Image 1: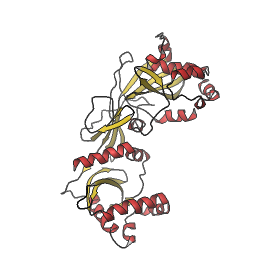
Image 2 (image 1 turned 30 degrees about the vertical axis):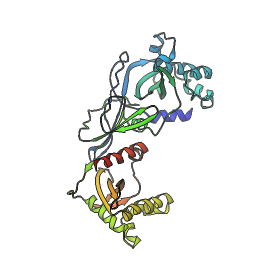
Image 3 (image 1 turned 90 degrees about the horizontal axis):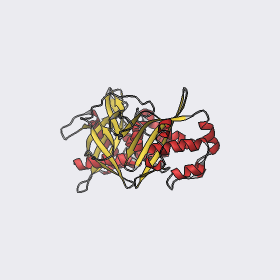
Image 4 (image 1 turned 60 degrees about the horizontal axis):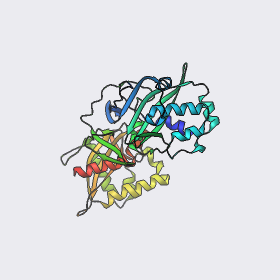
Length: 357
């Protein structure tokens, strides 16, 4: 159960503002990462925010089947956790329920000082709904969440959560979930959107606005063409020349000085010599496509190929120091790293650039 509690603190968020009697989800962009006062990464997901809605309000609705509304499920879960009734909790779940994941002693201790729940918000994608709520009592609140799956029109609690789903990755970074704060309107018209849609437990992406539930990631690329001139473009050329040199010291000299010690780590050493050096040495045609500005430097996306071969897309991290760029092996901002290294997001970015060629 502690594991579930920790996940609850970090996972899902978003924003909208309608009463719970008429559920209208909104997908409002929120900033995730900024550099030099410019929003570089933003996100959005279909979200509904409750207005002073408590478990006591659910109780007044005198329902008979808890599977007809997500809120009924959550309230029934709270009631049965309070009395440690695992058999009743089991009936609220789909087939993913496992009694071993529920420690009755921990449940009793966790809920001892709380007498109700307050619904905060809920988020949806495909057949999945995340309900954010707090355990509450006078002057106290404890953040929690429930994952709910819509199965043929009936709602069931579920333990099956794909933490790699962009819905979870992007949602975990929204400022609106735990704090429930209003955000200023964010203009994303000059950012590139990546939309993710979940269907039948599969995740699809597109750059065109879907007419269904979706999660969106916005990226503020600086694009290049054949006539572009920039210090990072010059560095990419320098990196290619160094990689093809017979002197291994040349490419090593382009690595950020404060990261040289990282080469003693097999992970970074393999990435440096087997991935970066291999691409820049073996492929003669390398063209920068775009970059994302970071507080350390830039993330440069580039196309690589050999004559007569189809092109691939890759990226490198550049760190700026004393007005010069150096190669970097690791992103210092963990949130940016988690987003851009996510398998679905990374694939969508690479496919986007392949389609632009």
